[in-house]
Length: 242
Image 1 (cartoon, rainbow, N blue to C red):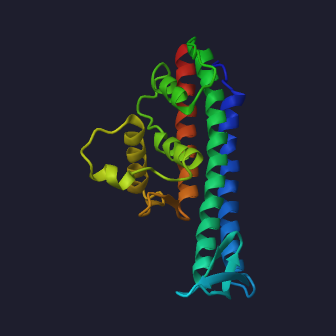
Image 2 (cartoon, rainbow, N blue to C red; image 1 turned 30 degrees about the vertical axis):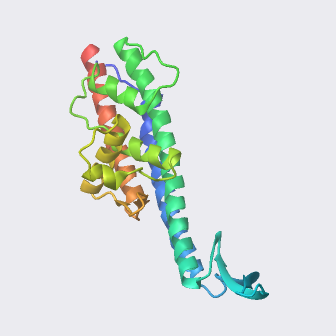
Image 3 (cartoon, rainbow, N blue to C red; image 1 turned 135 degrees about the vertical axis):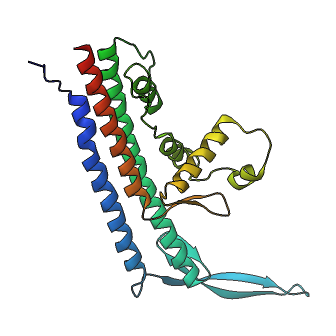
């Protein structure tokens, strides 16, 4: 009778998808609530500050300037302040959820790499292992050559975590024939793939990478796909070696 293969690490990776889905749903619910609250009376506060003006004769006049605040946003126009707040709360909430999801995914993939190393007898001799290391083992020794990576999500994660969601010089690089660094090429590939897959990613005039309400659901779907394909590939490999 065939021996049943069970791995706590693979099981943990599969069950983590439910946690990610909960994070995505809660993030979008929080955004809807925050946007609704921003439209309530009193959500935008008004205040005044003193400013000074000097005329051509050197006379100094004091006058008051009204300003508006909404959350952490402040400015001289109430509608602009509210709009800025809505944009900021939406992007920061999605960014926070995605970074948490990716961190969980990476942790589980490093655990799965250890499983693949033990099964194959290979060694990943690195102190800090990554999703890329996991994919290399998966598509190499384990035989999952047809499994598509999630490198685009790793690159987007780096943009959000290390560069305040700004893809530096993205628009200029798209139009330029100049030689690009590996990081620049990776960022361009990642953003283009996300756009082509209708992931809810756009890049604004200032090279800011923006997420709409499709992105978190898309990311969970990609993580789920990858985990399912990894699990199937590892089980096939384990079965082949007895």
